[in-house]
Image 1 (cartoon, helix red, strand yellow):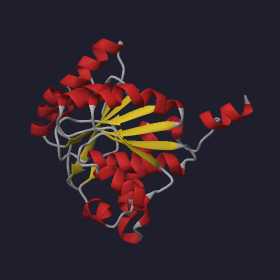
Image 2 (tube, helix red, strand yellow):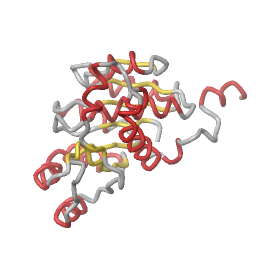
Image 3 (tube, helix red, strand yellow):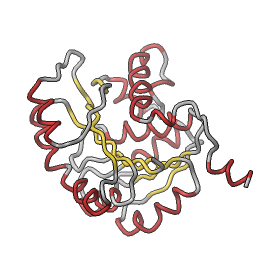
Length: 225
């Protein structure tokens, strides 16, 4: 799972928050990481340059650049985390044609999950072309602290044939404050403890093979070859 796309053609679902924190978490596990900012607003690359400057960044907000450059970039690092656009179907399609894993943030409501069927149309096209790739997982984002995943929502998600992560990202002010402070939630002290714990729990769940690096990185493998 070298190229991880955080993707949903619907905006305002927490893609940049997820992408920045996934990239920083992977770096904390000892991996070399590149964040590819594929959104024209370039907010995730600006944020992570302040919060975790050891994570390299690149702007790839044009479909041809994504298709042409992403594979080579993936050969130079352990993980590429790509922050997808909130619309721009052609850019999203190009990204999903190169990704190994799509993390799909979705707000926890029936309306949002029903809308996800449309939002994942581009994902389905990529999977058809590539014989099942990218793998994909839904991550519930911006959920209320007392939210309850109803049976209707479970069935609606199941109808999409996409697995759903057990750990949600709760709607917390700390996530909104983090980019303005150029920080990650686990850099923001005691008030961010719950956010920090849930984010790390989520990433360990969806990327178990990346936790606490146990194998040689690509760079180390080249050096020892």
